[in-house]
Structure formats: structure tokens, C-alpha cells
Length: 393
Ligand code: 3PG
Image 1: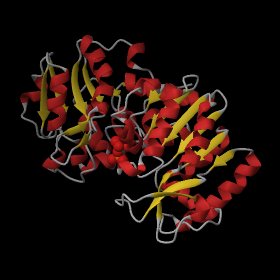
Image 2: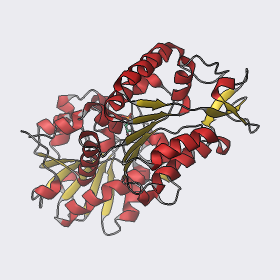
Image 3: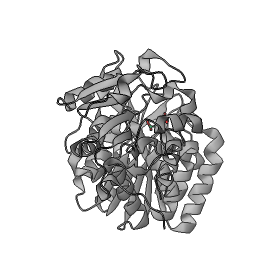
């Protein structure tokens, strides 16, 4: 059976390595880095390859530019990498298709080349094979360590593997092994907590979780659609009315599958997301003109009691509008409940979820904080990803 070979299972030495890294950091409005957890997560692979005297050519994307746009330049990443790797010279290659001729030939052992944002090239998203071939021609070996883009069939993730011996990096290994273990062989009870906004984008995940979880706790905007499907009036709350029927079907089928879908019983409501005059009400009594922005204390207690007895926990998506401190208590509570259950294997991921957590203490009490949002969800749902399949030999 074909499988991925990871870089610690093979000798890669004195090679030119094209490294698909994940440098997709979050930026502040003034373009400084707000959070570089993704750079940090790639450092073990970078250091491992450097130790073996390989010359690295890093390829990554930042944000979602459709064409060349200096606002999305990887120059901020290069500066940060330089701080982490002071003994190396990190050089940004502005356009690898038209480089200053000697930059690749003259790459020194202590020099790391970082190609400018690969999404500046429209061929990247199209997985254009000619483009992938040009990328591949820069190196002897390809290493994939961008777990968060492994669900994308793009040239620097999938296409390039056709032209080079290809291996998985240490972050990819950790992510794939941790998440796969939890899906294939979870210790029971498995409690999944799903928040965020839309049912429609998480429907595949929810269906999969209904197969493997014992309890599915639903919060956030997502829960509103279910609360509505139960026949409650939800005031002006966000709701995907076109998904109410689907939510009803899921509720019905969960009864058959003996899965317990647990919905909020109370909520913190306000006139709008910036309103500080909130009140807590039962979900059956949402006042007209008010909207749900967080789970209430009774729901916290209910969710907390289930999280406390879980042996496996999967969490994706905040359960409230955490950007406003008035509505982040529910999300904080979920986090501390998970961190407090040290008998469980816990996997937490998703861009918004991590943004809600990152300044917190006790992060080490979470078994695995995934760098992937969509990639983590798709891996749970489908058991594999295009960027994983492409590495298998
Ligand atoms: C993410 O942030 O989830 C990944 O970097 C994927 O980004 P994309 O949606 O732009 O492909």
C-alpha cells in the first residue's frame, strides 16, 4: 500500500529542497505580524533539513491575493524568519520565473531562499502543471509541510509532486497522525464541539461526526439554525433559513443513531454585536428584536459536564461572537473545560478558534492544536486530503 515517507524516515542530505511551508500568518491592520504560530510550527522541519546541510527554497502563500499585490508580500515573514534563524541569510526572491539570474545557482549553504507569495501567480490555484514543473526545476527534492493548505489541489501542494521525489515534513506528520488516530480509533466517549457560523460549510463534517461522536455539542451561529429547526423564535439572530430543513433532518437522524446532539438551552442576547447591554434568556424566550451572541451559563454547565467526562474531544469553531469581550465567556469556558480534562485526547483547530485562544495560558494542556482550519475539517470528514494523497508513493 502506498504511503507518505516523512523526512525523518529517509536521508535527505546536501540537496536543494523545495519546502512547501505554511507562512500564512495573521497580520495587524498596520501589516505587522499579529500571530506567527504557523511560522513557528514549521521551524522543526526547517531546522531538521538545515542540520543535514540542505539548501532550502521555501514556497508559501499569504492571504488570498488573486494577482501580485505588495500588501500581501512575504517580506514580513522573511523578517520574522530571520529573527528565528539568525545564523542564516534569508532572501526573498521577488519573481522566481524571472529571477536575478544567479540567485538560485549561487545559493550558499547558509542562505535560505523564500519565493514571493505563490498566490501572486494565478497558475498556482489552477494547479497548472507547466507552472508546477518550473517550480520543481528549482530543486532536487520536494518537502510538504503546509498542513493548512493540504486540502487545496494547487501547484505548490499537489502539482509539484509529479516532478520531484516528495516527502512529508514534521508538522504534516504530526497533524496527520494526531487527527487520523482520533478519527480511526477514538477513546470513548468522544465529545465534539462545533461552533462558527454556517451549517452549510460544515455539513460534511457534522455528518461524519454524527457517525463517530457520542455527543455533538453545537454552539455559535451554527446553533441558531438548529434552535430554529426545533421550532423556536430566534429574534434577529443570524440564521441560515435555507439550512433549517437540513438541521431538522440531522436532529431526526441523530435520534436514530443514538448520537446526542446537544444544543444551547440558554443564550446571551443583545440588540447587535457591538451592544454591551446584553441579557441572558432561555432559547425558548428570545425577545423580538434581539439576537443570540453567546451560549448562556446553563448551556456552559451542560457542555462542561459532558466535556469533563470525555476521553476524546474535538473542537472547531467559537461558540459566540468572541471578538466582543461581552460575548466571549462561552468560548473561554469551553477552552478551560477542555484544558481541565487531562484524561482526554483533545484536538482543537480552525482559524477563528485559534484566534480566540492564542493569548491564553495552559495551551500546552490541549493535546493537539491544529494549524489547519479547512484542512483539519476535511481530514476529519474524508480521512485524507489531496496534498496527502499526492505525497503517497
Ligand atoms: C487557511 O487559512 O485555512 C489555509 O491557509 C487555507 O487558505 P485558503 O483558504 O486561502 O486556501
